[in-house]
Length: 147
Image (cartoon, rainbow, N blue to C red):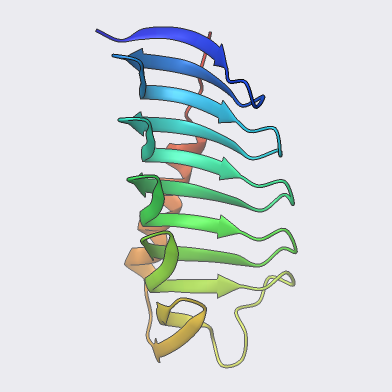
């Protein structure tokens, strides 16, 4: 049975949320001393399901996680204003998506299609994938952890 609690680790990391058998399980918020913050689902102590991961430089990922890594659909917003909306695998951009530059444009030629990391390998329209990424980001951003 899950119980909700706050725990501060000796290194200053703090977790508030659901615990099962001494592990982070369910919804929670983890804040590290270096300024990284995650709010979302946990499974067996790892980021899982929907969540928001915010980095000290202000960049953030909103979307799906599996086994502690970006996995599935989501939106990554870089600290300098660049945005990738699309698919992620094993913590990296991988699959269909679109890049939006800080000026709001998608580049010439348009940076939409299939990506391997930061490299666009095939241009194509990805409207359905982009919409799934936006929905995943909205689901992740709606998570609140109340104590």
